[in-house]
Length: 62
Image (cartoon, rainbow, N blue to C red; front, side, top):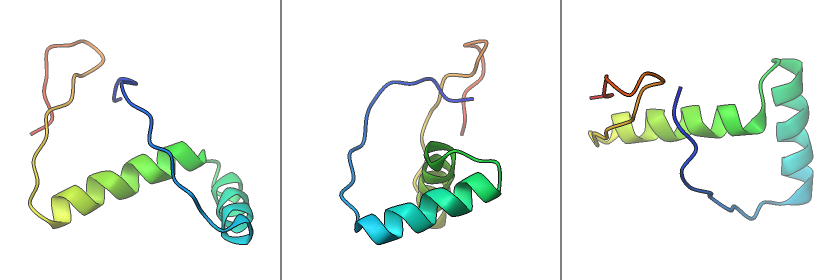
């Protein structure tokens, strides 16, 4: 899993936020987990590579 290193603040319509949080809860996921996955997918879709420290600190993502 990725290490916590930065905060991203996003402004969103309160109605969409509530719907998003309810959907995440129904899928037993946190909103943060879903947003991190969306960011990873977006980077991959656009061919952007990045390095992430692993839990053991010895492996890198891409």
